[in-house]
Structures are given as C-alpha cells and as structure tokens.
Image 1 (tube, chains in turn brown, yellow):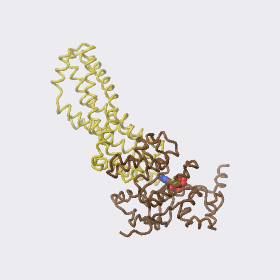
Image 2: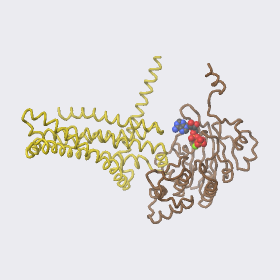
Image 3: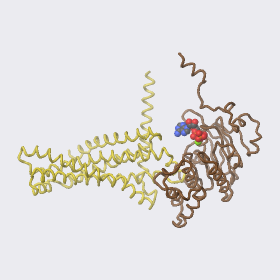
Length: 269
Length: 259
Ligand SMILES: Nc1ncnc2c1ncn2[C@@H]1O[C@H](COP(=O)(O)OP(=O)(O)OP(=O)(O)O)[C@@H](O)[C@H]1O
Ligand SMILES: [Mg+2]
C-alpha cells in the first residue's frame, strides 16, 4: 500500500460542545515521520483535538484521515485497529492506579502481543530507563510525584512503539533536567524508530526546539503554521503575542464572556 | 410558564430515555464476556475476591444477628401457643424466603455496589477508561464485564451463606440459650423446608437482585459526572436506587411466586 505523506489529514473539521463552538472548519496536516507541535492558549481545544484524532469524540462535521482512513466514519472494529497504531500521553497521565509502574508499562504489551515475560521485562525496563524511572518500577502511581507520574505515563504510551504518538503537555511539571531529557527522548524516538509525533504544549521554547512543524491554534481555527524558523519571523500580531506571552493583543486571554466593565457595573446597584 | 414546564418535562424525558439506552448498552456489553477471551478469567477471579470475598465478613455477622433476633422474637411468639418446637421452621423459612435474599442484597448494595460505582467513577475521572480505549482495549470487556459477572455469581452465594449463618444464630439463641429441644428444632425445620417452594425461590430472588444491583452500580459509575462531587452523588444514588429496586422487586417476585 502506498501511504500518503501525511499520517493525519484533518479537513473542514467543526466541533461544538453544547452551544460553544470549539473548532470551525479547521484544516491541519501531520506529516509522517516528523514532530508536529500544536500550540495555543489554554482552553482553546488542544486536548479536544487529540481526542478527536483518537476517535474518542465525534466531530459535528469534517473528516479526519489516519493513514488515509476516515476516523469519523470508521466502524468500532477498525477504529480499535487504528488505535493500536497510536499512543497517547494524557494530560493527567491516566496511569492505572491499581497496578505498579512496571505493570502499567507492561500492560499494553501484554494485551497486544504474545511476547514471553522475559522479553516484556526487558522492554519495560528499557522504556523506564529512557524516562529515568527504572528505580521506580515497583512503586504504585499513588507513590509518584506529579512529574514522575507523567514520565511513567510517557513510558507506557511508547511501550508498543506506535506509528503515531500524541503527547498532551509532556513538559508540564518537569524540572529543567527531566524537561531536557523528555525533549531529547521525543526527538530520538521520533527519528530512531521512524515514528510520527504530535506534541501539544505551551512551552514555546521547548516546542520550537524540537518541532519540525508548528501549528498555532486560536479563535476556533489555525491562526499560524510553519517551521519554527518561519514562525519566529512571523509578523502577525496574534503570533507575536502568543510567542512572547503578552497578555494584551488579539488573542483573548479570557474565557468568552460578557464585557468586564459592564458586569462589574451591573453589580453596583 | 407552561412552555417552560413542558420543555423541562420533555428534557427530563429525553434524559431518562438516553440514560436508559446507555444502561441497556452497558448491560449488553457486560453480558458478553467473550470480548477478553482467556484473559477474562484472571480478571473475573480478582473481582470475585473484591466483590464477593470481601463482603463475606459483613454477611456472616449480619446473618448471625438476624438469625438470633428472629429466634428471640419467634420464641416469645410461639411459646404462647406452646409451639416453640417449630422455632427452627420459622427461622429457616423467614431466612430462606425473605430475609436471606433481601437483607444480603441490601448489604451488598451498600458494601459492594457503592464501591463499584466509586471505583468506576474515579477511573473515568482520572481518564483511565479513556486511556484503555486509546490502547484499543474496550473498557466494557476489561472493566465492566468482569465486575458484572462477579456480582452475579457472588450475591446468590452470599445470600446462601447469610441464611446458613442465620439458622446457626437462631439455633444459638433458641436451643442453646432458650432451651428449645435441638432434635425438634432440626427435624421440624427439615420436614417443612421444601426445595422448590423455599430454597429455589430464594435463590431466584437473589439472582435477580444480583443483576439489578450490579447493573445499577456499574451504570451509575460509568455515567457519573467525572468530578469528586459527581462521584459522591453517583455513589449515594447507587445505594438508594439499588436498595429501593431490591425492595420493590422483592414484593413483585413474592407476589408472582407465592400466589
Ligand atoms: N467534558 C467536557 N464537557 C464540556 N466542555 C468541555 C469538556 N472538556 C472540555 N471542555 C471545553 O472545551 C474547551 C477545550 O478544552 P480542551 O481541554 O481541549 O482545552 P486545551 O486547549 O487542552 O486546554 P489546556 O491547554 O488548558 O489543557 C474548554 O474551553 C472546555 O471548557
Ligand atoms: Mg489540554
């Protein structure tokens, strides 16, 4: 089969939560074998986008192609088949609380392969070593710090060497050293294993340092895209505001709401 | 005003129907254990331990006490007619037909049902269910089905144990304390307890209760609003709904079986 250059192609996707429009005809492509970053203000719908790609949410309209197959209309069976090729690091980690770190990482391997325990043991320890948690293998999720839990979850999401890995905020809660380790890990996994990575993050510098291609999302759609170099030269106010973290500008910092002044005055009766 | 009332009525109607639909889907998913193949059995065994074995102590203690109280009450009633020999019969029949299935179901709803709801609600809130889905593993097969079958198997057994310990408690008070003749206690009980009339009906009741309680508990957890408040509400609602369902169904089943 001749696969297209893009592992994910999203076209004219719209998604609503109750009455609030999260996405309005968004278009986005994730090139195969590259690290694609998705940035945007908090609450704009980045996690939602990953869930749409994973088929956990259904859009109101539009297409999401994964290896040229539409996730939106896929049967449950073929959706599960596609998910086997995806890994996802959840924003909260989502480790299984009743299993040790080791078993958490081993879980997807035991479920989807028939490898003997001796090999699983080696694979799991390799993954844990990669995130610096080999020593914590026998701990339970409740015994980990927030940052450790996310690294353990990261080890689990790469356990099966999926074709596509989606990282939701991989750097959140990490100290500078583990941050650098994770940045390097994402890059190395991507290049050594020929995976495709989607990184969702607010950390502008880290993202620009590892991404091959960057999308910035705001106002229900993509407001800028390009390589890190291109974005650094971007003149658009919205982009400059986001990249430099200025509170004033065209990107709203606040959740949509009625006028501040008006609401304050309303209460002074 | 009227349209508002109608609207909210319609809305709750729709909510009720979609809720019932989701509950139905959940039951269907849970009834199909084959989804996990051989991996189903270790999961089931673990849940049998959590749902069944861990409810054992409370069932045994409650059974003993209920049997003892029955015996005390029964004795003071029967002795007036000089019929205290029939104490064994009275204790056994009350337990096998009614109190065994019903009280153990109520305890089960409080002990195991609430725990199931809270556990699944928490799994939902911490995205463990989502992450199973993303690993291409159906939470219905991995989480729901083993718990459902464990509930289904456990409660009838727990009811039987409850009744057995109740009879023991009745013997303790009636024979060892109040001095009813032990031979008469057992002999009249054996002569009057009928397999079809008493034991099978009790067993059938507790099977129905098992389905209903476990189903409600799993559904409430799976449908819980994934916040701490949502989970605590769902847990309470499981105990209340399941208990009322047990009592209501008990009346219906009794009416069907004994009339
Ligand atoms: N379960 C839900 N029900 C209703 N609305 C939701 C739900 N989950 C998210 N939302 C809404 O959807 C919007 C997008 O949420 P999402 O989690 O995708 O944001 P995000 O871009 O990942 O934010 P962050 O960077 O803070 O993680 C938010 O404004 C939120 O209010
Ligand atoms: Mg998010």
